[in-house]
Length: 444
Image 1 (cartoon, rainbow, N blue to C red):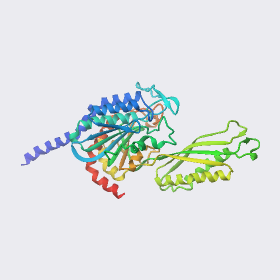
Image 2 (cartoon, rainbow, N blue to C red):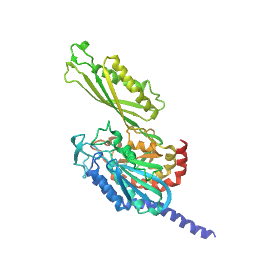
Image 3 (cartoon, helix red, strand yellow):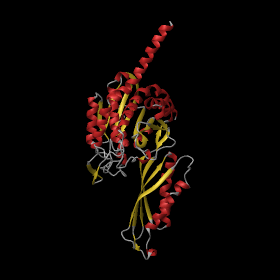
Image 4 (cartoon, rainbow, N blue to C red):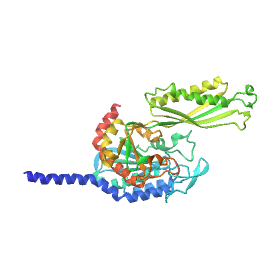
């Protein structure tokens, strides 16, 4: 009896190991194709709302895998639907497709030389934030999952989203709700197949290639656009008392805006930032101008702090204007709320992360990243999880790596198989934790 048990146990163990390893095997076998896809997309980038060729490529690939394709979302967005052979939940995997208006200086053989029209002006175009990698990794996962439907419980919604960085052809300040994730949702991307959870990832410079970085709660800041127009009375610089100086008033406004953070924000709950990055006023040094225009950004990792800033800022500026006998017009346009990782989903999906990269390559972040993502809007509808994938090659000093949104930004192709594998494991493992995640979501 002991001998029989000894024989059965190794066979069972081998069977389990074999079942577990098929994902890594399949990912390895498809690695070259994913790299080729990524390099092609990188060489031919397209700006937000203009991803026509990228969208066509995504559709062609998905159809070749036998995945149902749906379009008509956010201009160039693509939805893929894959039904597993076994009953289970509907979950979504998201990748963004758009590039940035800048000239590439990475020096890679497949560097972009493309130009396009951005806000009415011709510019170079580059995938300087890794969306080419995001698209390729999700396509790679889609191919492998489609070939293994018998192992899937439930339905997968593949979300290929345009214009995460903004649209090239519209005013992103006044029409921000007409692009990106907000427009995907508004156009009914989840109408026919409503996911109960969504997963996303982002390649990051300054993080080790193939390593995963995550935390629960806030993972990325909110972002709101700010415009202030100050109107005074133009006069010669030698007689300021005869006019009303919008430059002097604007300087006070910029200083006083910081009091919303240092004196009006409970910093034990999180952080806030108000930055004026553009100020225009006047044409000569000896003329006090009639008007000053300022453009800025508002960031926070706490929704309550964010709301307090958005509520208090216009009043502060208007009162400052009144004190200087000028007028001020304040416009605030939302880009994204705080990107939140659902606590229950984060805790329960952790073993999946560890399974993908091993404990030594899995890192819990001490604090959230300062950037923002419109993935946050999906998290308002369902439990969401967003993870960072390190993209800086092993032989490069992390502190010296060109950051995301830099002309010299690069993604180590070796990291792509990690992202592809993780997408697959999200699909395979989520059904096992679905009930717990949904129970926690309903309570919250």
